[in-house]
Image (cartoon, rainbow, N blue to C red):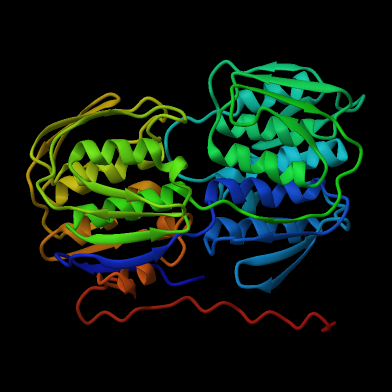
Amino acid sequence: MKTPEKFVISGGRVLHGEVEISGAKNAVVAILPATILADEPCIIENVPEISDVTISIQILRELGAKVEFIAPHTYRIDTRSIRNHCVPYESARRMRASYYFMGALLGKFGHCRVSRPGGCPLGDRPIDQHMKAFAKLGADCKQDRGMIDITTPNGLKGNQIFFDCVTVGATMNAILAAVKADGLTIIENAAKEPHIVDLASFLNSMGADIMGAGTDTIKIRGVKYLRGTSYAVIPDQIEAGTYMVAAAATGGDVLIKNVIPKHLESIISVMEKIGVKIEQFDDAVRVSVDGPLVKTSIKTRPHPGFPTDMQPQISALLCLAEGTSMIKEGVSEQRFQYVDELRRMGADIQVDGKVAVIEGTGKLTGAPVKACDLRAGAALMIAGLAASGVTTIEDIYHIERGYADMEGKLRALGACIEKKPITPVTKQNEPIIQEVQPEKPHQDAV
C-alpha cells in the first residue's frame, strides 16, 4: 500500500509566471470508456496525469482492452478484445465516473454489470436518471448487493428521454448508450457542459450521428459501426479556474495557457466583480490584482452558470475580500463540508443549508487541515498559498484525482510547497510494529 502523503505549504508567496492547463478530467473520464464503442483502435491525446485516469485505464485493461502509452499524455486504446462486461467492484468504488462504463458497455454489448460508483463524498447523488434513460432505450436494470446489472432483452431502441433535472452524468451515459441503438433518440432537458460537447465531438469523429450537444435537446441517430480516431481532450476549465483564483488570492500575475476562454466566461465574470483583472487571448488568460478584493454574491448553476466545481475555490478567495459575501449552492448537496477546515485557518464563514455567508477577514493563517473532496482540497491549497505561516494538507489523494502535478505547477509559479510522507504517530519510546505478510508462493510452485 502506498504511504499516505501530505502537502506542506509556506504561504505568503506571490505567484508569477506561466502555467499550462491539462486535459479536462470531466471529459476524459467519459471519453476513455467511450473507446469501448469503437470498432477500431483509438488514439487519445492531451490525457491528464491524474488518478481518475489511472483507474479508468486499469478498468479498461481489466475488461480486456489493450492500452498503450505511446507519447506524453497520449494513449492508444484497442477495445476489440473486450469479452468481460463486468467492471470490478474494487475499481468502480474508487471513482464516481466509473458509471460511464455502464453506458459504453451497454451500447456495445447490450449487457453490463457495474458496482455502484464511489468518488467524492458530496451527499446523495442518485443514479436514478441514468437508469431511467437506459430503461427508455429498452434496458432492464436490476440492483443486487451493491451491483447494478443491466440487460437488453430486445436490443437498444431509440426513444425520447426527458430528464427530471439537469444531470451531466446521465446525459453523457444516455449518449453512450444511444449512439449505436436502432433509430432516433431525443434527449430533452440535457446538460450543456463543455465536456458533454467534447464527448459528442469524440463520438462524431468516429462516425456517430449526434446533433445538439451543448443545448438542452440532443438528437442521436444510431449507427452500426464506429471507426477508430485520433482525438485530443479539451483543456480543463476547472483546473484553469483554480489557477486563476490562486493567482488572485496571492496578489500575483499569472498567464494561464492552453485554455478555451469561452468556457471560462462565468468564472471570469465573477472574478472581475471581486476586483481581479483578467486579460483574454486566443488560448490563454492573464490574471493579476492591482487593488483590493471586494465582496460579491454568487449562486452556482448548471452550465453556462457559475460551476459548482469552482465554489470552494472562490469561497477561499472571498475570505480575503473586504465585506460580506454570500454563496448559494444551486447544484450539489453537502458542498460546504470544507468550511470547517477553512475556519481552522481563520475564515469567518457561517452556513445555513445551501447558503454560506463569508465575512472577509482579509487574511488567513496556516494550519493543519484535511481535504474532504477534490475541489475542497483545491480550496485549501489556495488558502494555504495566501495564508501567513505553514499549512499542511492531508488526504491529498482527493486533489490528485483531478489535478495533474499541482505541486509542481505551483512551485514553478514561485510557491513554496512540498509533498511529504505522513509518518505514523507513536507513543514515546514505543516502536512501530509492522505486520509482516507471509510470502506468497511462486505461481509455478506446486
